[in-house]
Image 1 (cartoon, rainbow, N blue to C red):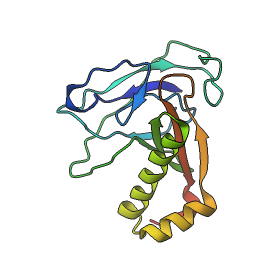
Image 2: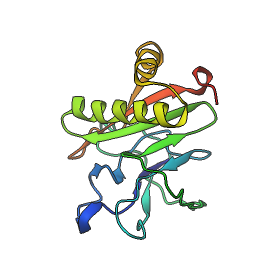
Image 3: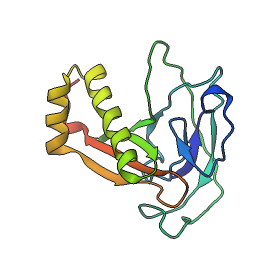
Length: 165
């Protein structure tokens, strides 16, 4: 899995790669690995994508402060989706879509992730906000990403079986 990746923060802000925010960063989420597609908001011209911090394995929350750190070769492609605006990092694989919220305290990270999921469901899956919230209230799964560094990562995850194209 890739623990730390994203794009440059907004407004020329320079922050440590040890933390995370709307731009991505050190999220340490176990499903950011082979076969997933990740979406980042573009917050500055050129996006300035970065990637690092590979782990062979890591438990939820990175509770020991580290996973099993490894070197790796990563093959990826980057596409710009013009006209698309998102607020927080998103991901998907064959079985799930997910959104991330990066903040402290943990309830604020959860709120960011959940709000971004509602935004995704209403813009890309033609749901109104009430339907999206009812669906999430019955089917959402929350996963813990990084809980060791300055900002925590909460993931709001929804199985694709609950969605229609």
